[in-house]
Length: 117
Image 1 (cartoon, helix red, strand yellow):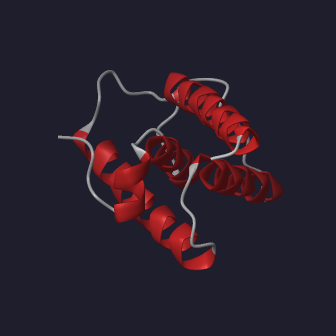
Image 2: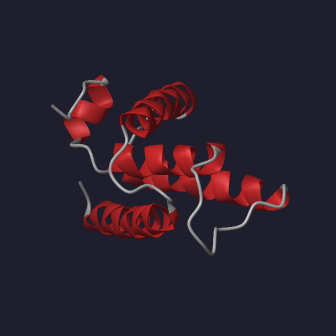
């Protein structure tokens, strides 16, 4: 792996970690929720399929690009980051899924293997 790719991946991971923190701080949930985790897992599987089928690569750079695309499309439809606690909507769940995917080890991502026990 070249130093440039490593640097880009590091930046993409930082961007997604910041997005994850921002999203989770906006959620109106007192504790981790099984239904939210199930929804995030389903969205993560869809994102993994989309990126694998379209680009053949599933790394932090591609996932960050996908998340930015979701943010751009959502903004075009009038979606804005919540300013107070909210229930998770499709956009929030999709973005949380992208962040979750990027936090998984690369080999598990590429193979489509579960990484959380």
